[in-house]
Amino acid sequence: MSHHAFSFNGEMLHALPSGALYWPAQNLLCVSDLHFGKAQRYALQGGSALPPYEVKDTLMRLDHDITTQAAKTVICLGDSFDRISASADLDLDAREWITRLQAGREWIWIEGNHDPGPVDLGGTHLAEHLRAGLIFRHIAIGETLKSGEISGHYHPKITLNLKARALTRRCFAIDERRLIMPAFGTYTGGLSVRAEPLNTLLSTKAIAVLTGETALPVPIKTR
Image 1 (cartoon, rainbow, N blue to C red):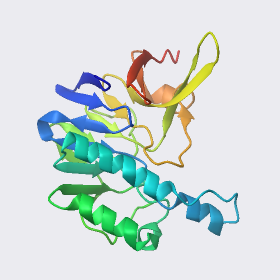
Image 2: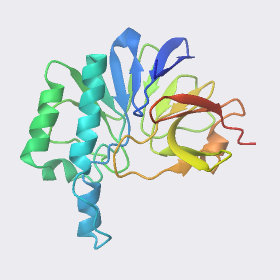
Image 3: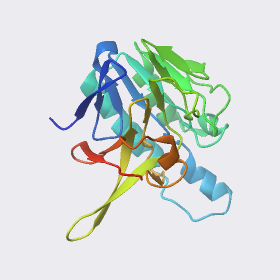
């Protein structure tokens, strides 16, 4: 078993090695921070040229998870597009690929800080989404939070100091009340779970679940 199964606010969830989250009882797959169009934005801003393969690679991995889990609902948890116009800039192959993935499924786009407006693709565009006691939103809220929040935005990662080398991985950050998703997009950086504001958002009991070949849970020990 390569995923990590855990109980969250009374629901059994699976953290997948890819960085996607699967909710078996709802047959729901959630991914965060796809950032389609990041390479193009870099080029338009005169930054370092990135290979223009990020959309295809991200879609390939998303397609694999949707197919493997046979998900009937997909939630994209904000910053699916790197800027508000990026959905319109997708090439025809990418747009047709997304349309194929949406066919026969409930598809929800949660708005993010990079893509706050509706996109010209299928699916439903929402600020946040409540389902069976879990709330899906892009950015974690502060101390008034009730249990059951699933968010993204911060691209959490963790570095483990092993005997031979330091290992850095994207990760899920999970405590008793909140779950912060790793970025799923190919060209996305990360913020250490031990750095602000993640270390203040998470409780002392928080764990990280590493992405990679196997979803591996480890304590964070932020303080």
